Image (cartoon, rainbow, N blue to C red):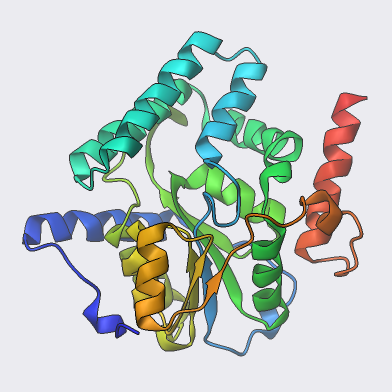
Length: 298
């Protein structure tokens, strides 16, 4: 496998500095919450999971947008426009930071003027109502294994850090690294506070968290479906390709990385409802989410 010090970097120092800024800003914004067993943690290992199509089917930000549309926060026409902008960006295959920032800000436009507190509450509701059904049970089992081993488990995603944090909290994970949005007077401006957490920026965020938390990257694990996350995967001693795209699959095979594919497995309800993992596991947290969602529908 690639050595952690051999993560590919852009040629221009100004571009690299922007990636580092995004990663460091994400680490500063990340606040680990109490997870049962944290006080007993004796290992310097941790696990880092991408979100979209790794731990959740589809784009978490898109699921949030759909949930807001169902609550009449904006029209169906607006969400179609949002989807078209995202599709154009994905199909272009652009790795340019300006293009990524533009696409991300387009996605964030629907929260402009909303309060952070309001969106956090709505994020919890939408996770319980919709996102929980998009979770991938095989990846959740991997995350639970790391928790059971006394390791920290972090989400690492280009999704806004507030939404990523909601997902991490609902799953009982340590915390989340995500894109930092600009906030003024407790409300979203609709713009980013620096570049999106994408590609090399994810690796920089993990490096910053590892330093802060006293983690040994050689003992850490990382999981992703996307070749864009090769820098993040290459940074740790135990990279795993989950539901990989073709480029990542080839790279994983060339470097001897494990490949796990859960795309044809059973739906998450069959995994979550028998909360056999105990009172503090991912399954129990998801079961609580189902109960909360059902209570709101009554």
